[in-house]
Image (tube, rainbow, N blue to C red; front, side, top):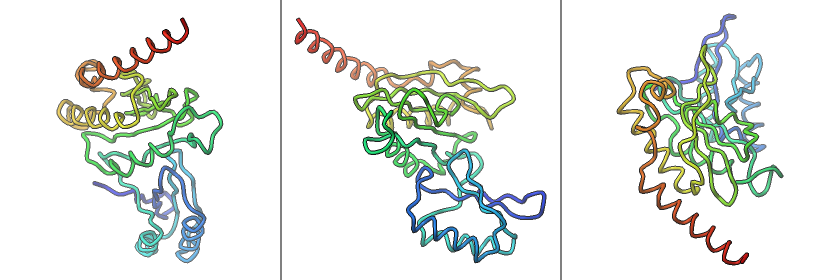
Length: 238
């Protein structure tokens, strides 16, 4: 597994710092700023992946890394691994448009899967509503809240590509706890079926969606619950 340390054209190093889906406490933020100042950082850049890049001289990289641990921050993993998770501010306390707890779900996914080795880099995005502020259809694994603690899941998106593609939906009305089951299944199939350094989206183009679909038992069980709920609602309305 590589790490997010990159030499820049001007000779400085970029250190990519990961927090919990971009969320920091004031203490973490001020601590990171203090460490950046102490280590002669030139600039700090917020990234589209909800990480923070600190630009500083090569000789100060190690000291900055040491300062991250007590702040409960870390250098982002890089390479063919699960990358930092993008999640919007969707939950019951924040975004008024939210249809589900996207933020806490994203934080938990990152805590479980960040840095796991994969055939090619694997990006996950969680959105709290169909507006998709985190671009879930451009991620390898996109999760979109659909209300009532249910989520839509799409796979195979490739936003950063010469031939970009939207992800394709593989499951609807997935309960929160089953999102992890579907993610684990997709990762396992990806690890088995992908060619070396093949993106999930390219594997889907080559093999189709079928090999990556969630187990039939899981989906049929959830559909049965939903059908029963619908029948009960119809009974009440008659």
